Amino acid sequence: MAILQTGGEMNLGNLASRPARRLLPLLAALALGGGAVAATAAVPANEPGAAVTNVEDTQSPNVASDSVSAAAAAEPSTTDAVVGAQPATGGYTPLGPEWIKGQPTDGAMTFQQQHTPDGHYALWMHDAILLPLIVAISLVVLGLLLWVVARYNRRANAVPSRTSHNTLIEVIWTAVPVLILVAIAVPSITLLSRQYRSPPEDALTVKVTGYQWYWGYTYPDNGGFEVISNMMDEGDAIAQGLPPQLAVDNRMVVPAGEPIRIQTTGADVIHSFAVPSLWFKIDAVPGRLNERVLFIEEPGIYYGQCSELCGARHAYMPIAVEALPRPQFNAWLLSKGGTLGGPEAAPALAPAQEPESGVEGAPGAGAPPTEETAPGTPVPEAA
Image (tube, rainbow, N blue to C red; front, side, top):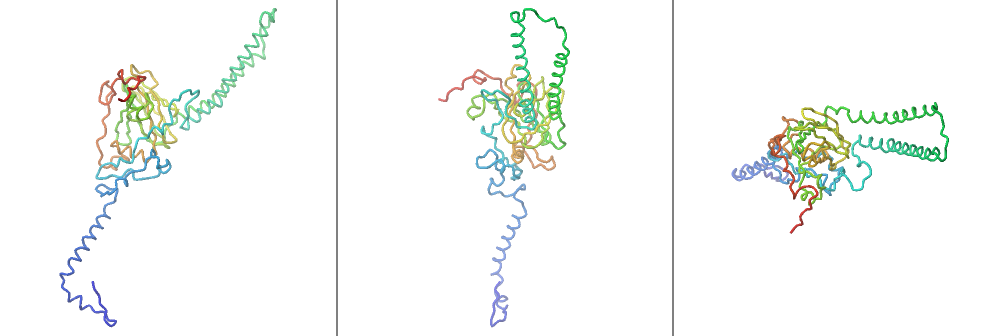
């Protein structure tokens, strides 16, 4: 709009005399531009139907990335963003072999390094109380045995003593074992109470089902989907830098740094869910629901195995637990079709996986090992 000044006076006559048609293109352009800006501001970038020009904007940095520290990856992010009613699953990337923290090691003489509060307490009890007592008692018994052999053999003591009772000795061999048992009982009962305390009400629930012969992990708090876990082919595991006979195709993914309610049951026979580096072992019994709380201190991969003889393929039931910071765990939930805050808060997601059957050969059950895939079989060299 032109406003002309002549001699200090404002003159609007020229504006009125211009043809109105000259202003129409300008007004139309302004209207279209303003409408586009308003439409863009009306749709948040993370809402369904939003126009996303950079997919990386909806992805969370993963703790497995070499360029992102674990602390930075744990910060709140946009892992729950949705693009066109599809979950932004790019925020989750499976942890690589460099994140393995719990597995057997060659030549080890003691327990695996612990990554839970209960594990630290149990390892301290073993190293500071049980092991010194075992060594001391063994040395005392060995010393007494050698002393008796040297002092009371027939050559050194031709005429044996006729003493039948010694009050002091009887008091000592009664009181000392009692004191030893009391010293062991106090930390032992403390450890038992710590291991079987009830999980908090808001703890994440993971239901672990033992099948013949694979594991199923159900997330009832996040949509009720089930993840089926079979042992990975030995050649594939070695190719990916993962430990053979321990690596699996689908890990049990849980958040690190918060309590988790683990519930176990068996679909057919008794199994046992055991992860040594987490100081965790609980039986999975058909028709029964056992429960314990698990708290993993830091992100990583932790391996275990079924520790109850459950049939012909008992040795082919490894356990792989992948602990992630909460943002990456949320991204994993979305990638599996799970929910973050209940059904009413969930976006339109892919159908959840149906629970597997306990019948051998059901969909999802791993194929039995062959001569080429059985553990210990040399991996064929690439041509």
